[in-house]
Amino acid sequence: MIKRLFVFPGQGSQTVGMGWDLADALPAAKEVFAEVDDALSLHLSRILFEGPVETLQLTENAQPALMAVSMAILRALEADGKKLTAMASMLAGHSLGEYSALSAAGAFNLADTARLLRLRGEAMQRAVPVGEGAMAAIIGLDFKAAQALAERAASGEVCVAANDNAPAQVVLSGHKGAIERVIAMAKDAGARMAVNLPVSAPFHCPLMQPAAEEMIEALAKTNIQAPLLPVIANVTARPVSDGDEIGRLYFTADDGTDLLTPAAQIHVEVDGPPGANDMPGRIIFSTTPDGAATVTEALRIDSSQNTILPATKKLYLDGG
Image 1 (cartoon, rainbow, N blue to C red):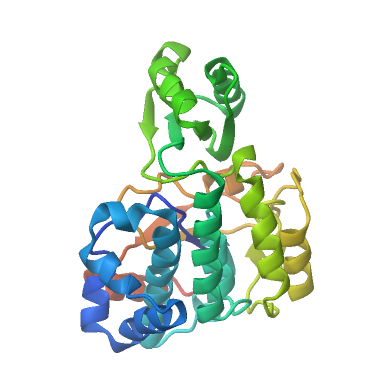
Image 2 (image 1 turned 180 degrees about the vertical axis):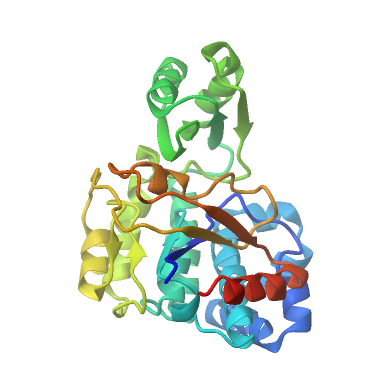
C-alpha cells in the first residue's frame, strides 16, 4: 500500500475568500465553519470569506481560520466517500498546521482546536504588539548561511532562523527592524530572494516565550485523545500516536534532532492558495539518512471546490 502524508499549512497561507465556495456548495464543509463560529462566539467565517485582509491577517483570526478551512476540505473529502484513514498513512503540519493535523486525527475535537488556536494567536500577539515583529522567507540559502545572515542583521535585536523548510528555504523571525535589514542584505549574502511574510507577529523565536507559557496552561486543561493516525511532531520530526506522548511534547521544551524514518511516497498538502507554501514538508523527507523517505509526487488540494473532487478521484486511482 502506498504511504501517503497529509501536510496542513501554517500561517501565511490565508487569503480572503478562502473556503467560501466549499461552504456554499457542500453541507459538510459549511458545518465546519458554523461549528468554529459557535466555539469562538465569533463570525470568523465572515472575516474569512469577506475580509478585510488586515483583519484576517491578525494571528488571532488567521490561525483558527486556516484550521477551519483545512478541516472543511477534509470533511468534504470524507463526504465524497473516503475516510482519512483510507486516504493517508501519516499527518503533519507547519506550525498551527500541527494543530490542524491533531484535530484531523481526532486528538483534539474541532471546537477545542478552534479555541486553542484563537488563544494561541492572542497570546502570540500579546507577546509582541502588531508592528514590532516580522518574519521573512530566505530563498537560496542553506540553514547555516541563513543563520549567519540573521546574526549579522540582528544588531542587538532578536533575529533568528525560525523554520528550516527546505535545503534552500529558511524563514527568519524577530524584531521588525532586524527583519528589514535581513531583506536588504539577503541578495548580497547569496540569496535568490527574500520575502516578507504576511504575519502579524514574529513566530518561532525567543520573543514568543510568554505565549508558550500561556499555551502550556491551556493545553493542560485540554482533553487529548490518541490520534487515529500518527502525527509527525515538529519538535522531533518523529510520528507520535499516543495522547500522553502528544501532551508531553507540548509541555516540554525540545530542540530534538531526531529524523523521520517511515517512508511516505506521496505528499498531499491540504488548503492554501496555490504557491503559498513552497514545497511544504520537504525537510521531513530530505533528512532521512538512507534517503528512503522521498517525495515521488506532490498533490495539492486547495480550497476551491473544483479541485476537491478531482483530487479525491486521484487518491482513489492511486490505490490509497
